[in-house]
Length: 277
Image (cartoon, rainbow, N blue to C red; front, side):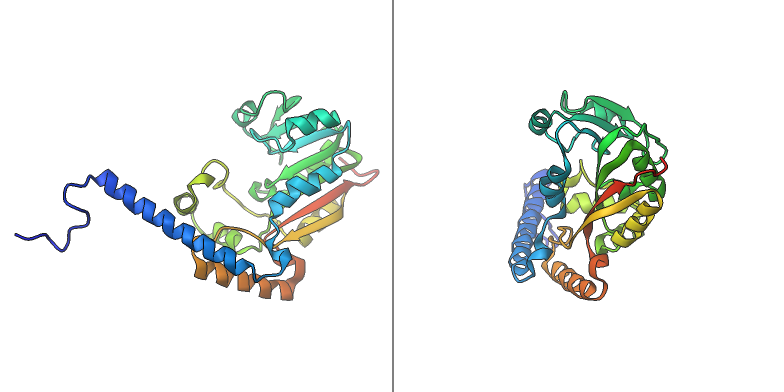
């Protein structure tokens, strides 16, 4: 008989090599879609192109990190935010606080002067910190109010907390809240395998919008002194039509809701003199 029309791979080709070819083709297709999305993004207002996470790391944190400060890196785990060179240059004392002791143990040597294994929601501090850094953590806690109360308890009066937060109002956050956890991970890691080690943790986005978080923080004795909003994320770059629709939605949403339409945001909180905690 002749070759079957139902044959799905070349005769003699191993299943592994055939799967590898399909995987390579998919990666090339996604790379092409990413190039299209980047060209499309050149048409957008410049503020919609700012990488919030990079801005937080490269500008917000250095601006508020002063020489000789006692710094708590909350949720940094094996990836402390402040590098060894800057730590030494400024003479910083850095305490790492994370829920996972294995993450803390995996941090580069000497980056933390001390480590604390604790859930930030239940932790209460000693009011000894000049600065608390909390990068992309609050969306994962069940009760943001309790987490902010813990941050207030860590800070000295007049101390500052630097928070970077993915917003509950972002489209990806809404999808994240709807889909089952295992399905979310399969989709995310299938499209972006490099995110397997840093993304995919359960997220709740409890009061994670600029206005809601600042109002909640104020009730905990933490007053917002700076806010930065960002309208950039990369979740939909794998498919140009979806990315373009998302970009148009964000432009419309921002025109109606202002800062509340942010995909992510940074906020600097100052502990009030005489505040409890």
